[in-house]
Image 1 (cartoon, rainbow, N blue to C red):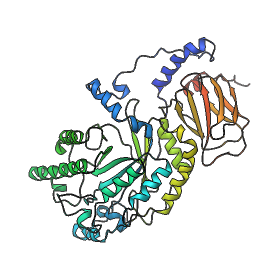
Image 2: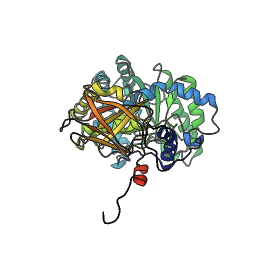
Image 3: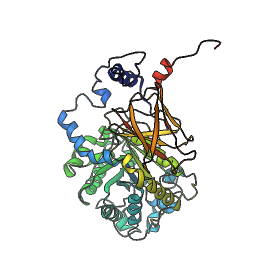
Length: 461
């Protein structure tokens, strides 16, 4: 379920106070209450008080490209892709390890399958890719000296991660590695929770695999940890793990799934913006499965995918959208169709998404919003006809136009709403039409103010 982002009560009061001066000057109607905002505390801005300013500055520098990118491709690919029953089949179906291992010999993808993934990512307007190097099943898609349960020594007979890295770089995309700490195959993968000797062995094995990934493929942009079960950060020695990663890859960014805060948070299958100042990325499937599931036909529509992308950008976050290739590396046709259609929309509207800033306009039953400075983009997914209205917009609008065509739109700004009028009765674009509005300051919305201050009519009137 998607949780639609809203401005908090505190932020609503804050923005009302900031706009009181503009109202007094006559640019906006005076509000019925004036609140002087206090400076937000460091923790409210997503900054841990004990973190040194130089560390904050370094994170901002490393993540500058990521914040601008907004849109990436997740790839779940492994032995489960051969089986075709979902990436959790080994556990959910209780498959014995010895039986599941046989899939490793059957896993024989076509050469350089990743070239088609990278081409499609670029076609869709995605700026980076994150591939599963090892999922929960324990099979390594890369060359390693630490186990024979890896692609070069099993069915593929070659390093699949190396092919992916080459393909992504050829399309000018940033490179990310997913790595699951949980391991259903390794003999110490569960007993490490209760056996200290097993924990030490498994932690050294895990650190060793990550060290190889950080050493053997050139510059890596993202390390995406997953599932810390059955240990906590202390058990994984995650501080030491991250120190090694940053020593080997000083420019990398890491997520929060090894028990440490990392550089960004990772809501999964739902869109929930982190507090201001905290980087976040929603990861989501196109159907109900991460890995290839041949029977899963519950595909999201292209409109839903674009709407999700808008909502992530609106809240200052990124959208990491998954594909689950088949065992031979081919991409299911519904994924190709939808990502191509998203790419058609991004060809015209991508500049409203890339580098978008967190937007305080976020309430509508028909539209999502993004912004660049004082420019507000209204992405209408439920087209209402010739007039689109936004309630509680407290910033003066100078002009508006249909973004894709440049056709001017008439603006009628009242105290409690803005109406964009004189537009076609049917949506001029598919799946989402965008209106660009030029504002005289950062766009601010307060629908609680509408509820509290809009005049009521008297009883019996």
